[in-house]
Image (cartoon, rainbow, N blue to C red; front, top):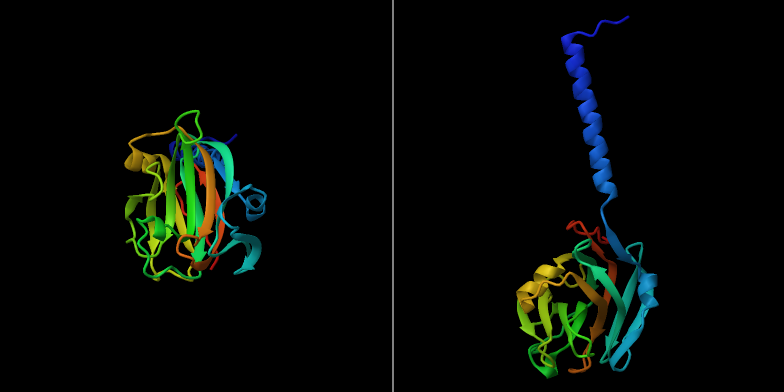
Length: 230
């Protein structure tokens, strides 16, 4: 029989500890939560038209199938009414790219309320249709990056310029947002869930044109940024 020395015993304990630690890391990774929407799934979402129909299609860019949205003076969104638990999956993430921005718009006015790309989330505050608060994440044209302002048509929609101007046009950009923190900053509320998500490209108010591409849209318990196409 082998006699276990003090060093052998210590090494065995360390090895067991390492195995237990590795197992815990694997379990921790396994319980990460994610709600992911593929481009094909988004194409099945209902359309909400504001002025005409933005064109949506599945295309291949950088070897990936992505959602393309093209607005030529139109404005319609793809939206999904679904409750998303922000306690389980508080981080909204996506990748986006735009062909151009809109020069000379005052985005705080009704005439300038157009964005080559936007993603927004909605939280119902009551039973009536207008009792909804929404956070709009936009690729702005003239408002500076990081700026926030109320939508010109309703105070119940607040906008955040995540990107601005021509600086990143043509690049894939990854975004990660703590949705509850944004609702708290913009509305003073801390919802436990949201009730819908939408995306769109629009140019109806100013009669402008742009194309945007989206992928990796979803909610996660991790604040890691998605791996965008290159």
